[in-house]
Amino acid sequence: MTRLLQLRPAPTSRTAQGGRDHAAVPLRPGSQLPGSPRPGSLPPGGAVDRPLRVLVVAESFLPQVNGVTNSVRRVLEHLAAEGHEAELVAPTGPSSYAGFPVTLARGATLPFYRDFRIGLETRRRLRAVMLRFRPDVVHVASPATLGHQAVRAADELGVPTVAIYQTDLVGFAERYGIAGGTRAMARLTRRIHTRADRTLAPSRASLAQLEALAVPRTALWPRGVDLDAFHPRWRSADLRRELSPDGRLVVGYVGRLAPEKELHLLARLADDPRYALVVVGGGPEEGRLRELLPGAHFLGVLHGEDLSRLYASLDVFVHTGRHETYCQSAQEALAAGVPVVAPRSGGPVDVVTDVVSGFLYVPGDADDLAAYVERLTDAALRQQMARAARESVAGRSWRAVNESLLTHYREVVAHRSGAAPVAARQVGLSGDRMAG
Image (tube, rainbow, N blue to C red; front, side):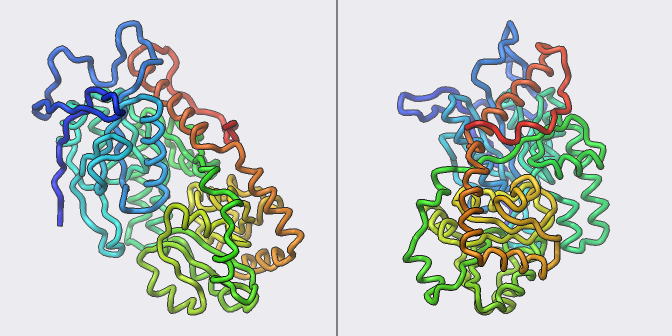
């Protein structure tokens, strides 16, 4: 069932308890508040160190659990902690998150992925939200249908946009075999990101994809990791006995169970009596995978401490999909002190240091994947890589990553306002290991 976008009042002040008061302002699409600064403009003097008003538009949010949702949550939490104002527009979600209101966009489910809802909101209604909230910048998370309209609406109002390239739409279309989908997704990606003031990509592979599509004004913005939630101290002897009572090597995957993840490669491991295979997550492939991997432990979607214990209790983490723009689950496994075996493709090339914190195998090659997992049956090598895994992500805290995001916000705001003479630039590939 389609849900209409609900125009919620903009946050106007922070209460003593840390909450926000709200006051409704009636607006007509295309109108502007009398006496208000132009959306995206700075106060007199062009100061760029004041608190920002950020409208976040996300293609996915709670209750969906995926990389887009998780990064949006972290961004909103950081904005709240640092005293900024924000509002979220998404197809699904609670009424508020991190003290900020959530505005629900109209949407629809995909016929081949009914657990996922896409946003199908009109530009007119998104303009009305922007005119009411008066953002300094619009953050568009993994833009597709909803994000496309949001970028166009912001551009029409003169509001700067920062687009987060987080989903390989072209690879998605390829895996699902959508007729004409690859070409259509390439055009959509180019159209969205060419209009954005700046596009942030999580890995060098993603930057190369955008360059091939002739997308301008790109920069590297990696993902952070919660170094407390994902830590070797969460390792649980009880959970390990439950998963592998006979002492087999515990090998696990965490992520969506979808065709583009190429999870059929796990069959090569499931048939090996040396391993106890664990699959965590949900998605349209779950039924087929249960038949394909009858001996595997399917634990469903895990959260909080349950997820922390699961990661840390693995001996080896495996990932199979070659179209990852970053591969956050691999980074979380590394933080938990678990060696990672992942494809030598896309985001994992930046996340996993080959032959140090894990191994990178030939994408799609089940034998190559299995050969590297077999090497990690050597306890001494596994322990050495486990130590290196944790050390490899020690500087990737979410705070460091999100502070760099605020810098990107301020730069595009300053450029649009005329406070900075230099246009948004192509940012170099250094800085993917930021100090926490």
